[in-house]
Image 1 (cartoon, helix red, strand yellow):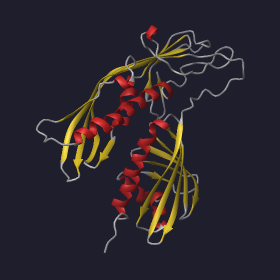
Image 2 (image 1 turned 180 degrees about the vertical axis):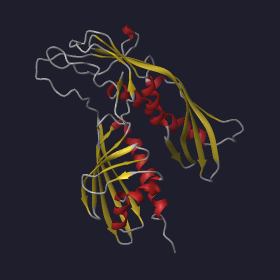
Image 3 (image 1 turned 90 degrees about the horizontal axis):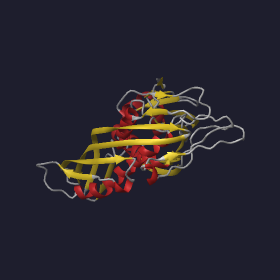
Length: 339
C-alpha cells in the first residue's frame, strides 16, 4: 500500500509488485477505482454551455458506479474500466427561468470507442419544455464526451507513472496506445528496452497556449493588488486561501484545487506565475502571464497561458472566466459603471 502526498490526485494506490522485478516480468496490478471516481467527478462538475436561449451547467455528479484497474504484465500495460455515470444539469433561460434535467452514460468502458458512447439527456418530470434540452443534447453532450475522453487520457498517463519499471538494459517507456480486437479490445501500451543511458521516465503530455482578455473598471494598481493580497483573494474566491504575494511566494486557493508560485512581479504592470489545477498530472504547471494595461478609466487585463494540457484547455478558460474574471467583478464592483 503506497500513500501519495496530500493534494496528489492519485490518493491511495494498492499495488502488488516485486521490487526486484527489473525486467517487468511479474504481474503488477493497481486498483484505479477510487482515483477514477474522484477524477470523473472533478472533470464533469461545472461543465457549462450556452447559446442565445440561455446557459446549462452540470451542477451535480449523482452517480459514478463501476471499477477500473491497470495491469502490467511482461512490460505491457493493460487497462480495464467500466463505468455508469449520471449527472444533474441545471439550465437558465435568458428570461431567468430555471430548469433541471439529467445526463447519463451507462457504457463508459475500455471495450467501447468514445464516439460509440450512449449519452442520454432528459428533462426532469413536471418541468416545462425548453429549447435548452437541445443545447444539452448538442453542445452539452460534446463537452461531456470530451471530459470522459480526458479521464481516459489521465488514466493512461497520470495514474500509470512508475508502473513500467527499468529493464536490465535501460528504461522501459510507454508507447502509443491502440485497441486490439484480437485481445478483447483491451488497450495495451508496449515497453521497449534501450542500451542508451537511462532517461527520465516522466510522461510527456500535449499542451497548448492561448490568450484571454478582460476589462475591469478600476486602476491597474488596484487590480494588480487583487491577485496578491490574501484578504482580497479570499473575498473573490469566497473561501480560505494561502497567498504569499512576493516573488517566489506560493499560493493555494479554491479548497486547494488551484496552486502555484509567483515567478515574476512588476508592480502594477505584470504578474508571471506557475499555476496548476490539482487534478493535472503530478508536478505539471502552466506558465501564466498577466499584463495590466491602463485604458484611462479602465484596466485591460491580458492573460497568456502556456503549457496547459490540451485536454484541459476549455476547463481552464471557463474556470478563469468564472472564478477569476466574473467573481472579481461581482465582488469588488469592477464590472459596471455607477452613475
